[in-house]
Structure formats: C-alpha cells, structure tokens
Image: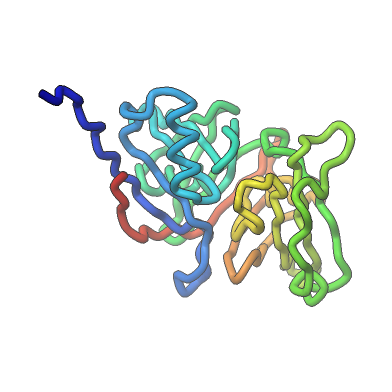
Length: 236
C-alpha cells in the first residue's frame, strides 16, 4: 500500500514589472503568495531555479509584507522589481525584505517604493557615449564587471544619456551570475544605484523597452516606480 502523501501544489502569480506605457515589456516575476509549502531556503531556491525568472518572491506574511527573494541561483536581501511587483499584487503599504522596511505608494499608474541604494547588490555602472552604443553591446561573459570589494557576480549596468536635460537614460543590465539570466529586462536595484550616483531623478528605458522612474529623496532614500501587470498563474 502506497502511503506517500503527494506534495501540495503551489500557485505562482506571474507579473511583468516596469512595463512600458502600452503595457508591453517589463521584467517577469513569480510571486508565491503562500510560502508554507516551501519553508526553507533549499526548497525556495529549487523552485526559483525551476521557474527560471529573473526573481521569484515568497510571501511569508501577506499582512506585514514579509517577503523572501531568490534569483535562479542566489537569495537576495533586496531587489527592486520583486518589491514593486509584490506590493502591487498584495496592495501593501509596506514591504519587508531581509534588507529592511520599504514603504510603498501608488498613484493610479505607477507603484512606488522607497529604498536605500546601499541595499542594492553591488555592480559596475558603466557609462557609454550614446544610446546606440548601449544597444550594440554583446552579452559579456559571466563574472565580467566584478572588481575588488564587490560581489563576484556584481555584473554590469550599461547606460547612456538619451536626453540628459530631461533625465532620460538608455540602459541594459548584465547580471553575470551564470544562472541562465544573461540580460535583465528591468533592474530596479541598479536604477537605485545610478540615481544615487547621479543625484537626480531619472526616466530609464531598459532592455527591450521597459520603463523605470526614480527620484532621490532625503537621508539617502531613493524612490523607484513602475507599472505592473498580471500575466497569469502557474501551478507547480
């Protein structure tokens, strides 16, 4: 007699975060609203790897906004697009990743979070002379962009001014982790770092056409906003 209890199915909401004005593009995000069936880091990492999204969020407490974030290969204390997406999906005023408390607001079109750039995983911000140069870049080998004192998988955030007076930026992100994500479609954490370095509000077009908005605030806070849409639900 077989007494094996089958594992409970897990529903994963699939979002696109930092969409363009017409609802296209955006970075794919998986959100596991009920994380009880993935209680430990190993099982969460395994599911994130199976899904293959840039990041997957596990919601440990939907009322308090406690979340846990994974790429296909590593656990992250903070990441921009997972927090914007989870806040939009769960209609939260505060999101609590391991890095700290993140406040949220919505304006009807964009969902905004307030975070510290120092929470973002380190990476190389590499400026180019024109948007065309950024568009022409090839994906670098894994590990390129790391430097002494940085994470070994810091990666490269390539950017150029499209219209400097208006704060319009063209960017592409190459995580360089060797986990199957060669290029990130929309990277909130890198946008925070660039905003902190430049000290001004930015309107960033990244990847194929994703849009990220930022604004520096007081005491090292940066506000990050974007559009979110629900693509569907997966069951694993």
